Image (tube, rainbow, N blue to C red):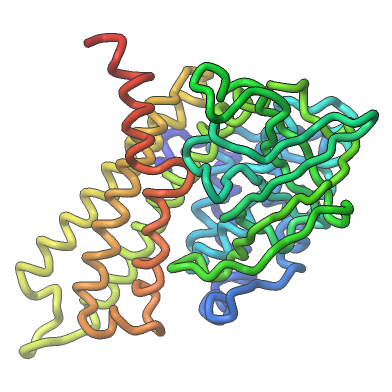
Length: 388
């Protein structure tokens, strides 16, 4: 992000996070991508370095930083060259906020510190086979039975689903997904821990990109969870999920900008080394102009995302602006990564070339956290509809 919004703590974190990534991720990124997995002890190493809790309260083992501290870490992780590793290592960034926002002091003390230290992995489970961006359509149901909730249903496309020790799960405790007047009612959030009877993971899902992040199906079959694991009260989940989307979408926007920057940097290096017709590729005007367009789109997206982040730091309602930022960043990243492959020529189509990986990885930015089409609807309802 733009460092005009930074103080000395942000700059120090940027430097230390980049150095950590250069040591722990960059040398292994390509191999981990091909393996479709990264070592579990990377979470502990990141926890020891203080990278997992930069925005969480100090009382829970975090650093108490602001939104820019979180975006700095997200950008640094992308800089390691594997979006999959970055997203897998950062899955707690969308799993813990509902616990911090809705959970009791006891729940926060029980669930948060082990994740920030890297001893446990946290994931968020909202999407279902028949309900993605339409959160109100979820059908996984939790029924109160004494001092427990009995959960039945399934989730899919869950980042870190295979390795997660605890999962923040969206369930239905009331309402009716088929009734337009009641489908937003009765959505709740509950924490389900690994090893709970009736909770198991399915296959690792094969994806276009983000190979090193495990993505899984989750199944709940008469899964009995302590009622004490309910976050807030019954029916508070929808509001919690919507609030969580703001942070998730801002992280995705910043990650898209970082991915675009990485593709641009790789391309600038390549066109200086690669020669054609007796001169380097940047000796051709068509190459220079394409690079200028790439740089302009990345810079514009970075500026807008940074401005929205600053407004979020001030406590403003930025739901519509974050949706715009995510769309703008995703579009800029798609353009830059496509141009990067084109300027690399045949090498850009090879798996050994990093821009080939970035081209595949960027495609999810327009889907994850709410599709471009859903973002446009948010922009309309939250930013445009009242004034037309």
